Image (cartoon, rainbow, N blue to C red; front, top):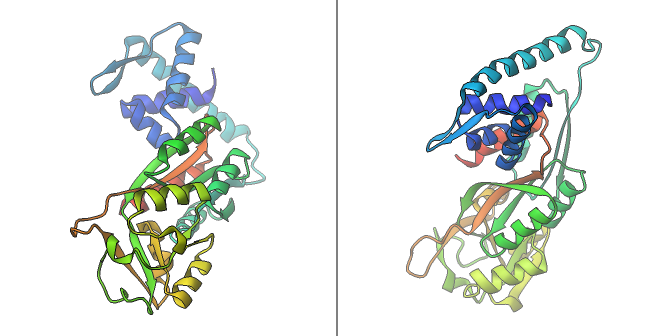
Length: 308
């Protein structure tokens, strides 16, 4: 028996649902299920029963819950009395992410809440490197964008590398342009109108570009007029100097709209209807590993931000 298993069990009891408990603890549902199964096997008792609305305690489970709370409480008291008092532990907040301007304010909020006793490491990298850093333990949280074009293959890659993916929000497609673009004063643009123009792609590997620009957006982009960039500054250069257009999801809008000469408008279908929600913001972590308290808080703030 481990203390974390008892903490998981207590949280499930509070939520009445394994799914909700997993969301609040920022761990996967299978991890919680496995922890409960281990407790049940170790003590040879049935703790939970599934219902149509979630789970409920068995009679023995309710009794076990009180003991579990006592153990956690005693553990905390033991730490309070005998734990080291001469230093405040520095906790880790280690993130690898694609480029999103709103992350900085979230990091600042977490640091303030923890009175700056947080070791923050933030790397802005392309999507492939996000996964490599989380897998290689140089980051604990990865934040990135999935597309409908590569979502299945991405999830297979996640599973192969023993990572968890948590989707948070969806977005349609927006088009960015500089003042020299003929669409600069428009409030929206149809996909068929921009097929002959130069395009830039941000943070995409060759495989994803082939799938997205020759798949979902094949009627909007001529692949021979596509420039691939891995920084916002490079995209800005081609938009300003060559009149190029850039497709982005809504979470990158803030980075571009800070530029006084950049205009961002939604991409719509030829019939004027909204473009499908083909982009998905997600965060990833290693399987069966807990986030630090600052990391949990960061993910909570991120979820609040993207749901606005």
